[in-house]
Image (cartoon, rainbow, N blue to C red; front, side, top):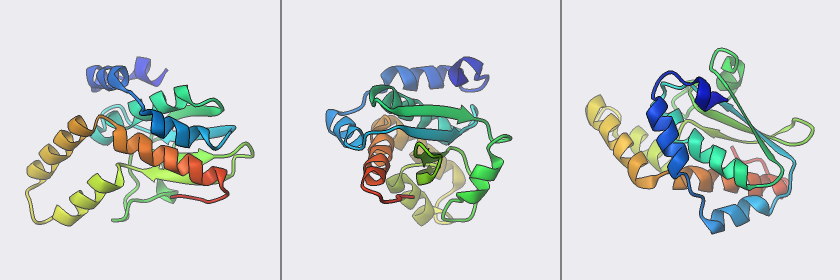
Length: 166
């Protein structure tokens, strides 16, 4: 439904969703923690991080029994974003919250994979914004969602062990 309603980056959303493939090892990790689980995703169709993570998270959710995915926009999800800020203090999209059957929070994924987040934070102020953006987009193209789904699967696996990974 989110993809059908997207107005910005529609082709990129569809392309990333279409090429979304989840490695067997990642699926095994996510499936090791039987649900039901709910992934609440706050996303914006024009957001470069959302378009490069959420389609892959959707592919993971489709392949793991007991995982339900719900995508809401940032107007509805503002309170969720504000409660889960980036390391530099911003509410950002995407914000992904893992909930258990009782809607208790069991984990979160904020904005982008850790490897990319750490690189950007380490280079902010050292490189021009355009260089950082270009590197980010190149990283996303090369990674094709693999780090994102690995981190989300790790979050689900941890929740299955009673741990909160956020």
